[in-house]
Amino acid sequence: MYITIKQVQKLIDEGHSRIKIKRAEHIQTVNLKKVQVGKGERTFFICPCCGKSAYKLYLDNTENFKCVHCTSVNPYEGIQNTTKGGYVYLQYKMERFAMNCGIGSFEYPFDYKKHPKPKGKHIDKWNKNLAIMQALENMRFQSILYQKAWNPKTVKSIVNGKNIFLSLSLEKLKRYFYPFDTGILRY
Image: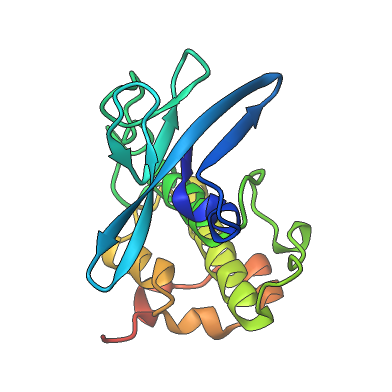
């Protein structure tokens, strides 16, 4: 598990220079650092262990968030030793996409009906993110059922929103299987 700067952007916009991360009964304070880049600035976490700037902090087995260099957790563990395009690979892609787009944690099989639009999110963007997740779930289920390994280009076309089947309704993506390999748009 990890936390990114994007996830605390609201606190950064409010002017906070440190944040508190609550996990169960454990509370950890992490400082933030602003760095000049070009004509603007970018905010990073300051690793509580080594003091380096980090965009992501990973949860270590000590229940503390640390940078990738200080943690004993391998950030690529979820994708190592898997068949590229297989169901474990697709699960990894789904979990990363869900964290990055604001869906957060979810249960398998993914069901778009369990994720209503949060207040303040644009409806079209939210529905596109749900369609991507539902298409990945469709591919994952096909991979489990038929031992199919999808072409990584196909998976990338879904994650990037460049597959023609993403224009289908969420209900159709949930109910029916589609040959996503044939729907890649050229870009």
